Length: 101
Image 1 (cartoon, rainbow, N blue to C red):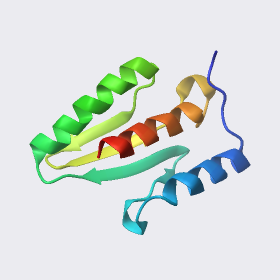
Image 2 (image 1 turned 30 degrees about the horizontal axis):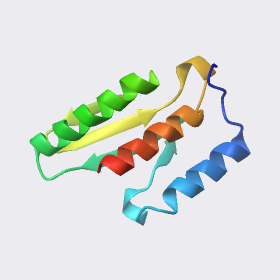
Image 3 (image 1 turned 90 degrees about the vertical axis):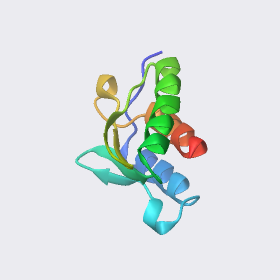
């Protein structure tokens, strides 16, 4: 079944639910139509290890993040290109990412 773009109300509700479990400085944001968060680790090894774990989950979901890594920081952008916006798949990915921290 193809992913379906969330409407504005669904997106707002899902983002509030995710962010309710996170500290204010660690919340997800909506940036240019994508969900964004910067993860900061103690060092490169921890950042890269986390990315490796997330990559394995992304392959299972067939849903891959847009991300970049510089030393201990990983910038993550999530959007479901096939749906033309943010879908439930993006929130599944967020839940996995947060669980792996």
